[in-house]
Length: 266
Image (cartoon, rainbow, N blue to C red; front, side, top):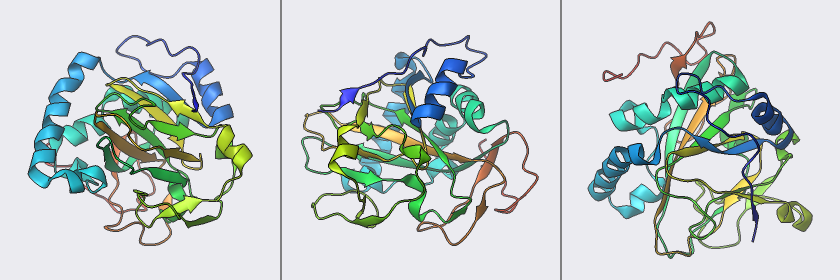
């Protein structure tokens, strides 16, 4: 089982300033990920979990598993999570003051289940130029080794985009059943990014990551929130439905994705 890693110096700065510490930034630069960053108190997660529960009841478990994407433009609670000031402070520490929200995606694994997420690099099929993005993963539920938390391989953010084949194992939740070709030595270096409700992990768009099946009787729900610098531009249609980024902090002097208005409820 992968080692569970929480990087050093993840003490929470004052509420008005959630910029990452120099130690956290150095860790991210060297390893390609962070975990255990508190975006909100665990008690404050309850209203968001209840709203996801209602959404799950509305659309059904099958769609709620991986079919809920880009809801930040339709559901106020998703927008609130993706624009949480603590999350944006952490992202700003890594990519700078100008931030576009590329999109959001719920990943929800019900247990026990054989479903898993194969090894992959996020930006492989995203049609971005340059292929750079940063993902914050917000834990709606506790995410641990028993219910299939995310795994990451340190230092793989230094790789270019690697070959992705097709997974031979049934149950891969990725959109086109893609799977990164890795060596056994690579996989042995994987670490578990365990999170308490209200915490986030952050990983680079090139970082190789995956998650194992949920072997528990607990749900594991998280919201992946994707961010880019305004300099990044589209180099194709992107995933199904395309991208509709929104400026969530700073300025966009490039307008590569057009001038999209904020949601009416923002």
